[in-house]
Length: 176
Image (cartoon, rainbow, N blue to C red; front, side, top):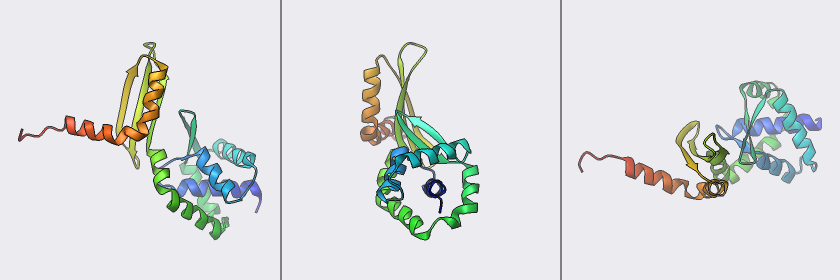
């Protein structure tokens, strides 16, 4: 099977099987390189670029990390060619997901980013998603870039505690 075609099929299959999550550039590269499907990261980069140009996948950059998601057009293309992807590779992908499930979910579902806003401050956005639904979308305005970075850096570790705190504080009990 032609190299780039194989890499494109692997990428589409991975993105299709990950449900509503997105995969990072690092996760895709690590899988394809670690399994020995290629030893040249440029092949993966070229495959990703061509899939984006064709509209088969979308890209979202969050704090210098690129995340990919399959599009409807990508799902349709995969349905035509999925039978050309060897069963052994499909099983490798499913095994990888089973081994990495917690890490994949955490990386895709809890994220944060910041940007410089019109008030000459930084807006920090901290998000928790459950499948396709946004559970929490918290936006904070902070005065410095270092504070924005610090909040983003600690969000993954502290997001569950922040969410629990907000629910407990905002929940009104009529029996009080």
